[in-house]
Image 1: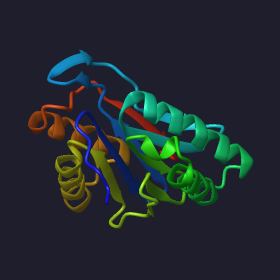
Image 2 (image 1 turned 45 degrees about the horizontal axis):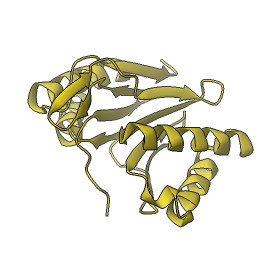
Image 3 (image 1 turned 180 degrees about the vertical axis):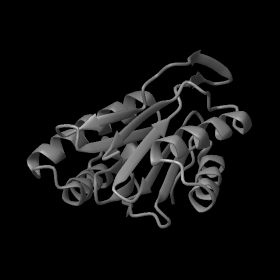
Length: 180
């Protein structure tokens, strides 16, 4: 079962030849905002892969480092790197306790990765994780159906809408794009 995390919203939008990933910057500790401008979306493997994370910051950073190593080992093959990471995440005694989710994307695939062993390729060219995921996902799908906005504009605006609803999401947004 995929656990929902309080504390962030990450959204990936795929449109024609581009993919955009956006994330808010809010870091909370309990009911207090600790930081507003954290960067939860990164470019990996020579700028060809986007990765975003939700959950415990230390856990997410550990997974991000391991995923980057898997990308190097697999010459940038996103699917192989993702499967390799998730196997290790699920089977390794220490990694199994990490509380985080990841969204990763390249020019061909968008994948949601979890410690439960999930490597999911979401439908409808939109995927989201974190506490504001449902809000951002709904907004992005509506924009995809009703506008001709670029993927990066859709991703940014959907996170802004989520921030208006979700108390764990702010409007300090990072957007990374491949192919736009």
